[in-house]
Amino acid sequence: MTNNLTNQQRLDDQTTPAPTSRHRWRVVDIVVAAVLGVACGLIFFAWNSVGYAWFTTMDALTPGLGGIAAGLWFLGGPLGMLIIRKPGAAIMVELIGAVVSALLGNVWGITTLYSGLAQGLGAELAFALFAYRNFKLPVALLAGAGAGLGAWTLELFTSGNLAKGPAFLAIYFATTVISGAVLAGGVGQLLTKALASTGVLDRFASGRDGGS
Image 1 (cartoon, rainbow, N blue to C red):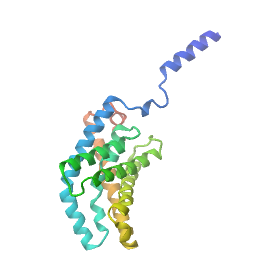
Image 2: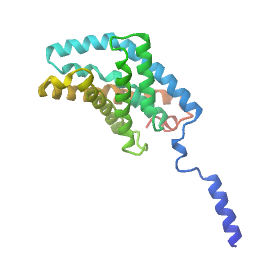
Image 3: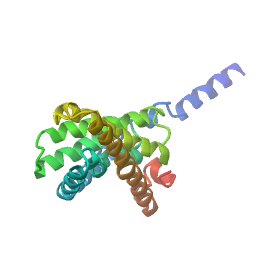
Image 4: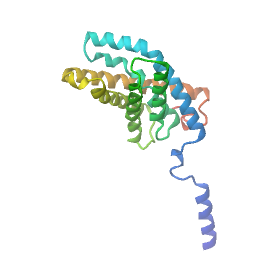
């Protein structure tokens, strides 16, 4: 009887996935992260002109209000994590997008990479708070807001915003975080659901549950 139980336990150990297996990156995860990063980089590049024009126009009306246009630049982090659902996905996709945008040419040059890293990290931390188990809309919105917070924090030093006074910082913080929540987190969730409905994400948990 004891031997039978031991053999059954060994069989269960062999057939039960390791607790960390859902966090391990597969080849398909890496490929999709690269594709998403390039796609987001193209979106960033297209948004560089339109978004920057909107940014400067709103900022001219009220200093700091330009942050309302920034959210689309944060899309890679939330979208990457919502689809791939592996630790590091938000940072990887946002950073690849930043690299593509920089290579295609923009006014920010190498600092685009720093921005991508900060924004991706901000989004990543939101999912990490929930142990990479919750990918529903509230967490997606939080991730977009986190990306905005990452951008806002970096720009304190890279854009000289630290010297612009508390009123500007408060307005810019609010608009950047709200824009990130809506245009990165909210749009990222909508795009994930749309892709899941086509069946292209069937190899991912995000596809099997309809994108949450």
